Image 1 (cartoon, helix red, strand yellow):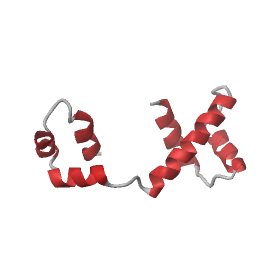
Image 2 (image 1 turned 120 degrees about the vertical axis):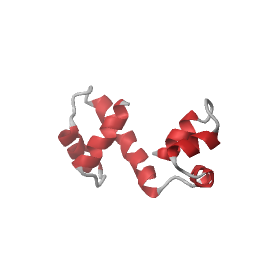
Image 3 (image 1 turned 90 degrees about the vertical axis):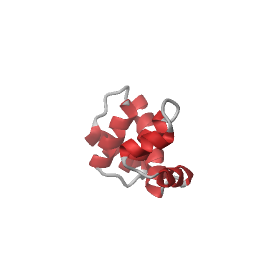
Length: 92
C-alpha cells in the first residue's frame, strides 16, 4: 500500500520525499515497481472479469452470495469473501 501511494503521487512530489514521509526505502520502491504481477493478482483479475460479465448479465441485481454461486457454476473456485472484495473493487 505504501509503495502504491508513492507511485500514485510521484508526479506531484519527488519520490525521495514521498519515500521518506512514508518510511520506506527508495530502493524498495524501485524493486516493487519492477516486480511482476503476483499469481494472486492475476487470478483476481480473471475473476473480476467474470464478475463484471455476470453483473452485467444480471442487470446489476446479483449480490455477493448469488455471484459466488454463479462463478462456481462457471468453474471458478472462489469464496464469498473474495467475491465481496472484488465486487467492491469493481465499483471503485
